[in-house]
Image 1 (spheres, rainbow, N blue to C red):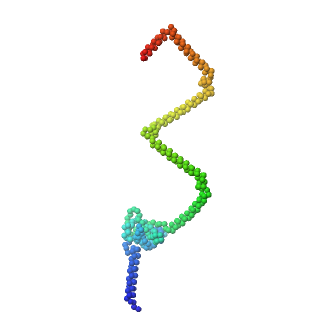
Image 2: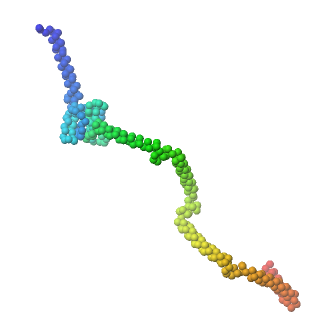
Length: 328
């Protein structure tokens, strides 16, 4: 059965459309893999690629700039990754850039992120190897999280034991919480400490006020505080006062000894004080002396009126008057 013209047209149209779709797909994939554009190669060395595969994207500052071309395992701890980067990005990437492996979202495929570093550096050249940084893998994070959960469980058990002991009044903390008397005493102690602190602060302020009010130019305090000569004089005065005090103590001691001797009936003073016969004799003697003095005055007065000595006393009176006139 011969094919009709319509069938031939449909077949040709299908082939043409399929070819166009294939060309578009190849172009799209090639553009994504940088097959048709100018590219350059750089490398980075990692300890663990965390599931990175050929063809995964390479990003610089969050922009897709290339793909992973080759993954070579150098040894058991070193893996070299070759990347194809668009040529137009070459002038922006510096040699101090750092490559890290991450995921495209929470559950996306692995990608390589190239992060620019601070500071100036020369641009990359095709074939250069940049520094790398290996992030903590998910397995390591899960392992750490598991260990943290175990430690948290142990800590919870210990906290439960401590809480039970406190509720039962065991230990210092339990005693403080459950003993109201002790808690009251503790509050009073804290209150007293606060009052003492306030008083200390007040005293310090008063001292500062006193110190600030001292006139360091004219006051005696300034002289005592700043003049070393007057300070030495004050020290000398204090030393002399101490010596005088010692001498006064010695004199007082001797006086006490004399008073004790007098009280005990020893020495002349005690004899004079305590012997009533001697005191009476002294009184009698003083009385006789007084009477004799009166009689002597009477005798002198009688001699003045005696005709034998009358001229002599008149002469004395004249001389006395002359002297008084000279003085006046």
